[in-house]
Length: 170
Image (cartoon, rainbow, N blue to C red):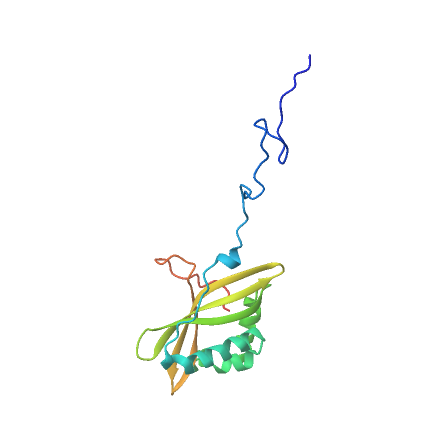
């Protein structure tokens, strides 16, 4: 005994005699994440433009592995504790198989009279994966010059959690 069932194929005549609408969208459309993501635009007050120039220089040095010049932008207290050789070693050990493609300052928040926190975005690339990392970077005014404070807070950590100090720096 053979049982036959009516089967309707996409684009074929249906049992109502009508063909499917060619303009209808498929049931699932893959979203274009990059196109639909909100654009992150910097919101930097004019008074912090000199800071952003130094910030951009610092991250350019890190990106290009010019650690001697990056080290010069650290605070004097940090440089008293950590020699250039140790600094280079720390940077090399903390380097993951990632490439920093770009870093951009988005906001500056004043913490006190001398210290500010710069919220930034960092575009990282590892093999075929692109990642956008949001982070806080601390800067301090010392002797009329902006200096980097060696600590980075991870925004992705919960608000009540302390940042993991075992994470590699930059």
